[in-house]
Image 1 (cartoon, each protein chain N blue to C red):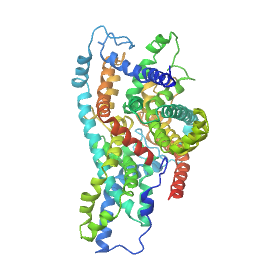
Image 2 (image 1 turned 90 degrees about the vertical axis):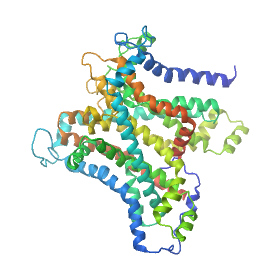
Image 3 (image 1 turned 135 degrees about the vertical axis):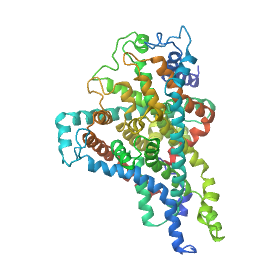
Image 4 (image 1 turned 90 degrees about the horizontal axis):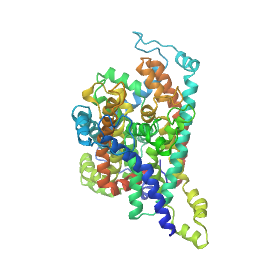
Length: 309
Length: 273
């Protein structure tokens, strides 16, 4: 998944050898190959592939603490999700959340990158400062902002207003998503800086000589050339935000009402109440949502890589 | 005032509000005794209780065991992922076989698609490791091997083959070629991937919340959650903020010491990844 793909020496070294390389013993060689792959593939298969496959089986069962046997029940779980209204609400909330995160986090990251683009001591200091939230646990960040944004909390008294940041069915989702953006904008900043630094300096120089303003160079040169970094950041923030849990759990637990109940919050809630199959069915929908964004992105990135080779 | 002065005044002001204020919030409220911190605010404490709060969360709370468990879980995950990942990445980068290529794509899917959490619990029960730290290490490794393999494979491709070929002709066995020639060359990418993994795993609450059972096994974020939910009437905000310090400080200290290398490493990882 390259954000930008510099001409790589590896591309030259890649073509298949014309003659098979000297292999003292093909069987031992094969054995060696699988020996090196085995540890990683075994762990991935057991702890990642198998649970994903189990998802597809158990989502269609009545598995719960309330029944002794696990029985195939077809689409019952999904029908119930739809009837309960959880499906439409949580899907809508999750997408809304992800879109706000994607916009705010990328605008913030891009603005920071443009401001701190040049590598020098002062910029290095500020880059580090804005990277600090990345290191803070999202759960901890959630609690800190819950305290700051409380109705009788310090932000309201500092601004002299009485706004219910965490109690509004309309605005709280945006508030929580903004905290998410605050926590991860440092990563987007770094990716954009890497993208900006890969732009040939002559291009910018030439534009300056022609009398282009700062904004013109940003709009006409930097922004178009940041396309790969932008694609990467958009995909990464969307997928990350679809899977959000910690921040929402710490700040609102899905409330007020169910206005911030993202998919993972519902999954946790149903799991805690013992409705496992039901909960897994929702997990499958989350997987579908991720795939809708992930697969086109994968194809795009692969094509770009192939064009570069 | 020059444009530069304006720019950096503005950036400083933003940094002060956006980053400084939340940190200030953590520090002053972690330093307040219980009554003062009931409605946490930006005011300085009247009575300083920072060390007694930290002492309480570390000894009576779960932060002490949490620290040890977090180190054990994160350390094992990073070790498993970097060693297993670089072994596989070497083959992935060097083999032209179609099967190996397919396996490569299959093993990096985890970058985009997360592990499902409830069926992981189910699986752990079947394996007889439900609720254990090992189950959690297994899940983290299963997911994050994808990222490590992707980053390391890209890096191995930039290492010239001649180095290995010379050794191969001399008849050195493959494991020696790997450990003595390849693995040491991977240091920069292992550092970058290691930092990313360490941050993800250290801070994870979601998976640990589902997979771990029992107070003796909880990691730092789970400990923080138990501090928050320990008092059913009101939140003990002084302990919550003290615990936030314990969860965050190790990473922040390491970052401050190695910030230039870490940012450069993450950026290089981001460019490739």
